[in-house]
Image (tube, rainbow over all chains, first blue to last red; front, side, top):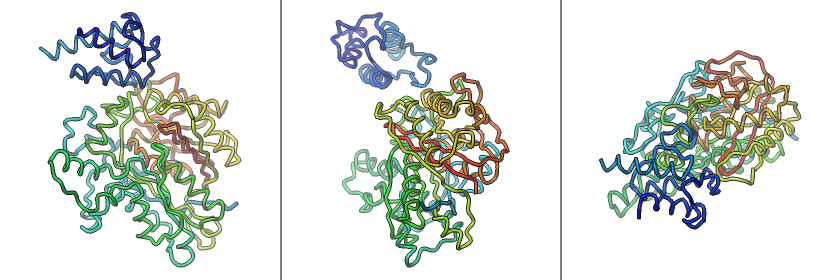
Length: 86
Length: 402
């Protein structure tokens, strides 16, 4: 399973949707994921890829990790996974 | 209904190990938040807190006591000794039966839990000390206070996360107000600064790695503290007849629940509680000179709290001073309202308003007089103390200058 598919599966589970309902331009808000759901999704992603995501719920816009869309989250995870492998 | 006054105060927290030292630190706007020191701290991403340093438990308690006293109980007993000594009360005969202990606490003996889990899970030991349970139970502190001072009336622990102490003090107030008790030992304590305690909070992603900056636009989360605040609440006539020194009068309280979200605060819930406390105290917003804010330094709390104060106070919102002392002593969770009540007493009795330190940048969503960085002198008549807990449980107390 690619990083993209795995991230989509995690987000879909959190949103109680089918992975096919989650598109790259979906936002967490459009999927109905609230702040607690976001923190839980990040935890699930960290566990799945064994990485640490730099995210503080107090300043979501300012953290290095962009959560504005599914695409940006996937890109962020791909970067972190590559960095960790390096 | 009986009037209720405060005739004793005690504390141990990151700013000081008694009331005078704590108030001096608040006046000077000192920060008690430092690098955490305990085993495995290097495995945490959050490594600061309002930890009590230079505290040698062996100097304060003997070996038999320490076998039974978790850190939160130690802090409580030290604060209770100071408060009761100041009040001058001796609990014998009828007074003993009409006096109790209601304390706030959230985590119980977290250090005891942490150490014993470590020994059975990590070190693989199959035996723990026989007193683990009586040491970690949330009511241990209240029970030891009752035993040390012969308090034989109603005693129990209130647990409502960050509002625990305010709920406890509201309960103690009611017991005297309604004529059920003559004196109550009340307040609260917390000690979660151990690896497991901070690790759990880290998971929620609301903690700051560098500082607690309530109401400042660049705030980035809460910082935990530890310690205790304990007060003697006494029926006014009882205190007057024996010529006790009265620190302040407790004139009202309110408790509400948001009934909406397990972590997100509600403006409506906070506003209902603030308005309820004013109503209970039979005062209007323009009579209030100071509010000790819940002011956790999270994005969500501070803007919600300011909006709630603005709603209730209307025009007077621009005049009332509101500060969060958490930037100095950290967030004591179940003990926080108790330590913060000291700032209200200082405002009423000494005319000194504790500042919100760490304030760096104006936030239009927190556009109130937050007494930034430096204490201020002001003569005020009434003060409020806010506490809004996870779980949507709120409690606000109203105090009057005596």
